[in-house]
Image (cartoon, rainbow, N blue to C red; front, side, top):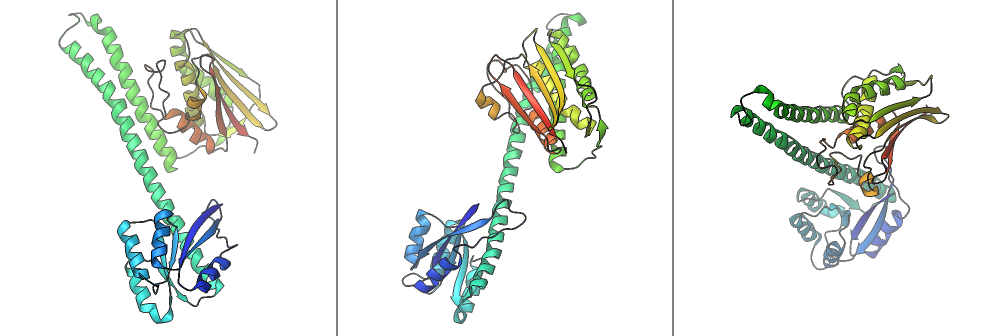
Length: 373
């Protein structure tokens, strides 16, 4: 339950205590809110006292009378405007001062409440004020998140593309200048390195496109009954050539007759990522075991490897956007840091969940669970 802090600034004690009493058990709830909003009411009898409270602990909402002993309400409003404080100001004033209240709204006040007001009038105004404040802050948070994502995107893109482009340029100069000799076969290793770098850039671009499609909610999904064992087997066959190079065995353990309604391409994205990671972060001569079992509560799929493993802190960050586990053992392993985030977001569309159990040098087990619907 969220709490908005309200500061009532009025030299009439009856107004201050009345507002506190009216809002004591008042709650606001809208369908777009994750939780109800309640109110904590503070009081100030003068503009000077209000400024001190604002300095010490800024409220979310300020109910401000203009006619105050000492400095007036409009001066408090001017202070808030100059300091660019995130406080929503509502003038509470008598009918005789409506002109002043209208002027105050032009100077930064959100609205005004004429007094005397009834409990229902105050609650109704607070409902509108709360909705405005909630949406304003949610919009700001979305903008900030968007800026952060764009910053992360550009940081990852510049880093991930700069390194392979520099390497490709270096190898190309070696070939152009015939630094390794005149025979074409002298450059086989350099050409292979160039191809690896190009494939890494292609994978990054594809991951970014996948993430964009999932985040935007666009794209056609083809949900049909399918055999998830066949999807996992396809993913194993895709990664097998690389596994053979490192003598890593790939194993599938599945019960017969398992069915799942899903989009085959989406499932392949999930398990291509999990299985390729299980090979990339494995040890030479290791193994990867994929297990599928249907239980009463749903479908359980585990991808277990005998690889380098992770610490609890590394596991806790694993499914975020642009997260890559960096340590001496992963330094030469390429990746965008998007694969597991994409897998998680795809699975969330099915009401499924993904988790990991791991320990350094003891391998990792990624568990996917599709609940029975």
